[in-house]
Image (cartoon, rainbow, N blue to C red; front, side, top):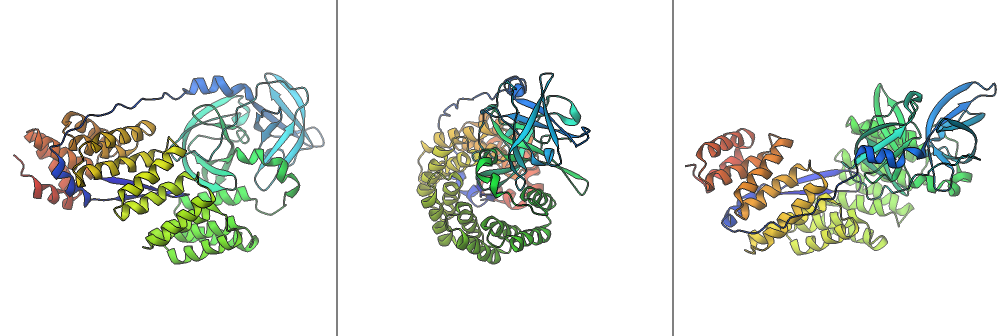
Length: 490
């Protein structure tokens, strides 16, 4: 069984190979699969038709009237246009182009540190975008960018969210969606066509990394406008360099980069939280814990820091302190889905499946599209079926894992677990199909070959069983030995 653990800023996986031995005793049980309803997301064409009228070109001019740059912008519900601050930073005059017409624009609110601003555009009447939010977005979520790369009006590109960084108010997004100069300030939209961020073109050491600032920062512009601080390096520039170092897995560089921020802003709890995360990524858990504690002394209500220190406690073998930290986070914010999820993961390590089920249900109440929580919930139901001979739990496990792969069709572990569920419930044909889906994603995923060995052996398919065993033995000899201890190939 493969259980997924998700933390506040990144994902980690716990593979429980030992649990595979226990599933053999339940292979003769049967259950009925509960079909899950699929909800079709909007197509790229539908997204474009819905939101493109709310995306504009932003042109900037110097004191001589010379065009010195361009970017993109999105029309907000109040009629203002939001864009990146760096698009208009050196402008003396600003024009907005939409539908073949141009309009004079003036700066209304700006936040250089976060690289966002809004423009007032008198006389422009156009359709505005619908704002969404970033707090419920997940790595792997599909997103669409609409902007004006190189001045090519209204260009659509699509991709997924490759990384998320919790920031004040929302999440900073790293995306695979292609972005070019001229796209900065354009709209990033979710699968329902809601604005979730402004795209930002960034080039670091010859490597293009695509980012988007969260839509929540636009809403905070009026509050932050007068608090704008001129610094050599803005917060967004610092975040971009963080992601570049993280992508390269340069953890020593990540620590140094975070330290510079804490020295420049010693009273910024976010900076200390980032340094703690850098230590955590490098495996220095005690230093990470000390640093998170510093962040929490600055801001005792910092939910993400409580969640992160819980992760560090968990990784350093202190489950009781991890549980206490997650519970503290939930006292501050009972609707924090990841804190519920991580709390459940610690309970699962202690074998308390009832408590994990309740924690995962809380996470799913808050975020019904939380694929990892569905996956872990399914694992717990399967454990109940095996350990307590509750055959009715396998149907629940199947439904939970079907939900996980509905949300993320490329979810390798969930497909493998679904294969296990079908194997346990005696549905050989469906078990083979689920295993094949897992192997489509990763042909070297040992757990899927393991269950294929079992299914083919039980159904008397000698040739397929032998081939599956050979593949398993080359990938994981211990798991192959585990299989041979239970079965003898025909």
